[in-house]
Length: 183
Image 1 (cartoon, rainbow, N blue to C red):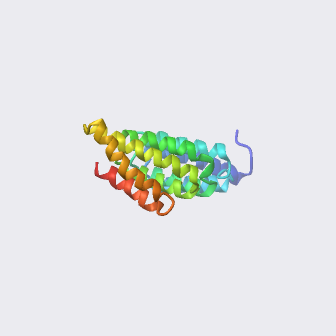
Image 2 (cartoon, rainbow, N blue to C red):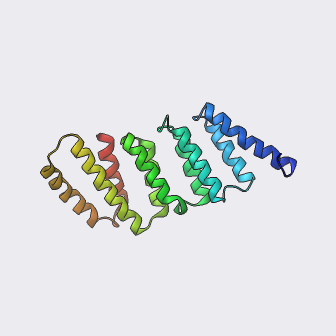
Image 3 (cartoon, helix red, strand yellow):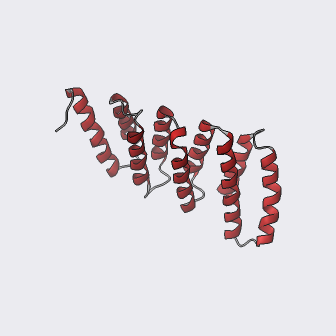
């Protein structure tokens, strides 16, 4: 039995119904938007557990279609309202898993850029530089480049990227994205 005012009960039911609708069609932007409005109306958008549950829902629904823009936008909209810093590690892990399946997933790369720029602190950028090195190495190895050639290839670009790390962070991100979109 639902407890609360009639309006609260209606919004809670609508929130539950939105999950059902999204299971049937996870690409429905209107339902995702409606869901966020329900969370906001109930005051749940600031509750970390609720936000995490919604991120989990989005991950589960996105599993069969990780290039679904609506799901990525929902994740971003939740964290824009709640704050990205609290979810940074979990979100970067989630994005890494998605990119392991498909390194050319534009929505995953865009979301990764957004969350990194939203948090924007030096330790996070240092970890991201290591991530890009690893991805670069993985792609080179997967196309059969020798280990020696990979080491040489890594020395030049990433020495340069490290030197300009905080001078032009967009260039680093664009370099990583350009490379992975082309391969």
